[in-house]
Length: 193
Image 1 (cartoon, rainbow, N blue to C red):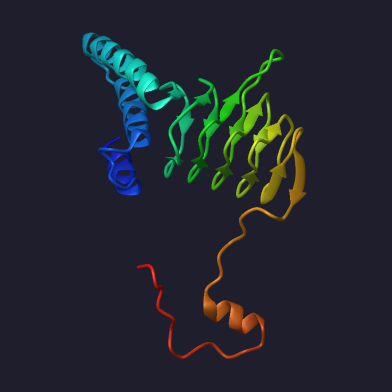
Image 2 (image 1 turned 45 degrees about the vertical axis):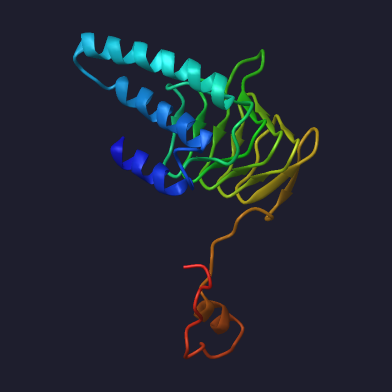
């Protein structure tokens, strides 16, 4: 937990003022409290988490129970009206914008979100669906069926556009070789270190 919390601290700018950081920090505290073996202490930490989570839900608008499974690199882009179902599974490097619902339908089942997925504002992902690795969910999209890896989902109901998600990054030398050019002898500097 401390490593993930430190990563979260670095990921959010001005973390003490960022409501998303506090929602994620309270989630991390809740996950850690579930692993305490000494039962009276686990009970006490559970009560502290319950109060903190209720307060965080009111102040941040983020409903995210400690039973949600979330990978490394998780980021909430904007606070406000984010609901994540208790049994949802979220992969590594997932970014969620505001006004997003990840939940269930009457027939049951909860979404599984793959690695490196971006979920845009107002998206609704419900039911027993899988969102593949590297996919993008567009604004105000309702996803009720599986989204293949590296796809873009947009619309109500979601229309899937394959191969428009995130692809792997290539370095400049690799791109030059594939285009039949010699690699640049002077490496380009990244303007944003």
